[in-house]
Each structure stands twice: as structure tokens, then as C-alpha cells.
Image 1 (cartoon, protein in one colour):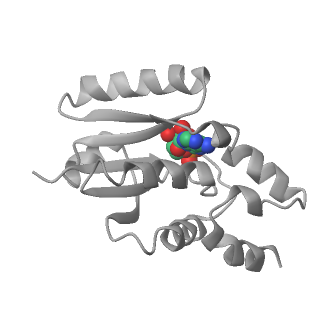
Image 2 (cartoon, protein in one colour):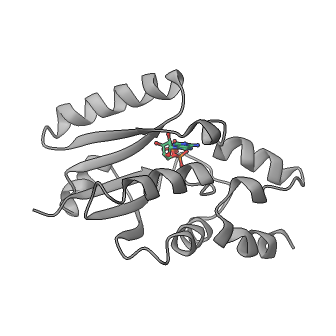
Length: 159
Ligand code: ADP
């Protein structure tokens, strides 16, 4: 059976932290579906189309990686695409507490789906979309925090 993992998130925008989690999990799974959750209650800075474009550009040379968006519960989306794994990154103990609740509730709802956590690498622990958005909004340079391949897109976006 194919090992399919869904990596859900907002990716507003994709960062080196996200990229690292995906690249490090390439050997663990046959397919990784990066899935942007469309959450009507959550306002995002970058549009869905832009976030999809940033992600698709970042992983264009990795045939194992798909980039999509979805609505509804992550576990329901996993069932739809036959994924047995949810992939998440952990930076801090605060991430752990938050993620533990979600992963255990997901497990209750769908016992066959496991959440797999990868710890952030020490250099990428502070890299965070919220802070990157604040730097960007205030005219700062975010190029050292995002995947190299999307820098031209970000620069185009800034004009
Ligand atoms: P969400 O809106 O679900 O929090 P994010 O786009 O912020 O989504 O993050 C998606 C996933 O990537 C989460 O599991 C988050 O913990 C992980 N992540 C974000 N930044 C990093 C990082 N620097 N290192 C490792 N994992 C990260």
C-alpha cells in the first residue's frame, strides 16, 4: 500500500521551515500532499492562489510532492486521498501542546490515521510565517527566510 502523507497548513507564506519538513520526509513517504486548508474564519495575508503558486514553485522538481487546497476537516481530506499519515512540524513546546490536542482528536475521529511529527532543525526553529508576514508588511527583506525558488515571485509581488 502506498504511503501517502498530507501536510496541512496555511503556508502564509511557505518558509524554509516548511520546505525543510517536506524535504526531510521525502524518504519516509511515497507521496506527500501539501494541502492548504481553506478556513473561511481565518484571514490570510497572501491569497490562496498566491500561496499555491509559491508552494508549487518551491516543489516543482519533486514529483512525489503535490500541492492542493481543501475545505473541511483534515481527516476527511485524508480519507478522500487515501492518506494514512498527517505530517506536521514541531518547533517548540507550545507547538507540541497545540499539536497534541489536534492529533489526538484526529485519532479519535479516525483511528487509522497517524500524525507524524518532525522536529524543526535548530537553525529553522525561529522561522515562522507570522513573523515573516510582519517583516514583509513593514517593508523588510524576507528573502533569507523563504525558499530560494520563490524569491523572484516575492520580489514581483512586492512591486
Ligand atoms: P497552521 O496554520 O496549520 O499552523 P502553518 O502553515 O503555520 O500552518 O504550518 C504548517 C506546519 O508547518 C505546522 O505543522 C507547523 O508546525 C510547521 N512549521 C512551520 N514552521 C516551521 C519550522 N520553522 N520548522 C518546522 N516546522 C514548521
